[in-house]
Image 1 (cartoon, rainbow, N blue to C red):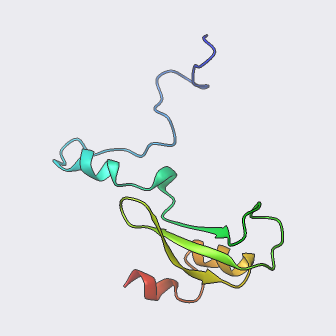
Image 2: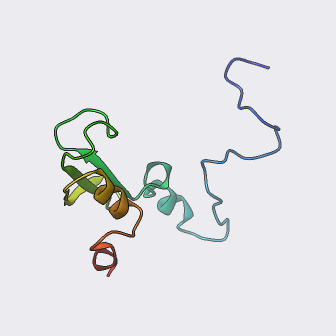
Length: 97
């Protein structure tokens, strides 16, 4: 095997790419508009650094709009940001509607 070969059986597709419907005429367009690694909501520390350090500092919340991540608000700490990113935090249902 070469240095850059994918581990696992050669007859299986990579796990990071979801199935694309061959009958859908807009499948290629929708594939380009998917968020990287299908993460539509993410959080980042406001003042740089690793996300697990200083869990009591505020976090910037970002949402994927089809082209890039845009600011969606702030969270007061890491647990609140993780709850928002997982869709279980306050305002999670308000953002979807």
